[in-house]
View 1: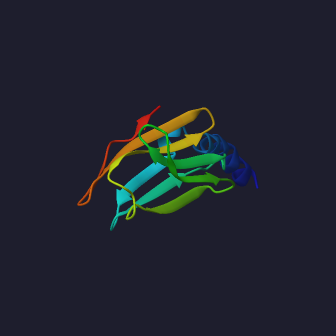
View 2 (view 1 turned 120 degrees about the horizontal axis):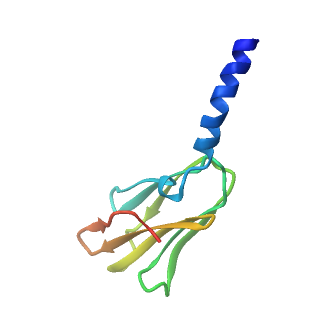
Length: 117
């Protein structure tokens, strides 16, 4: 019993550290797969997270999803019918926000590196 309590005491700070990941660690990956964008998120603290895909000028939103109570999440956004142009994928959580620019043309989809807003 004493060992169990000691192990728990040592593990608790590690679990707390994992549960407070900075926004940079929320967006695990994005990849293009057959004209779809596959997005994987981590959310160990199960905090409200908003995933949006909008035009670069923010005039039109093509996808918006609010995620609650998930410690991990995956989404597949179909880009097949998207007009050619530049778009921004945003992930917002708490006071932090990440963005990735997508360039879509008839033959390819290009993704920038992920950056904090």
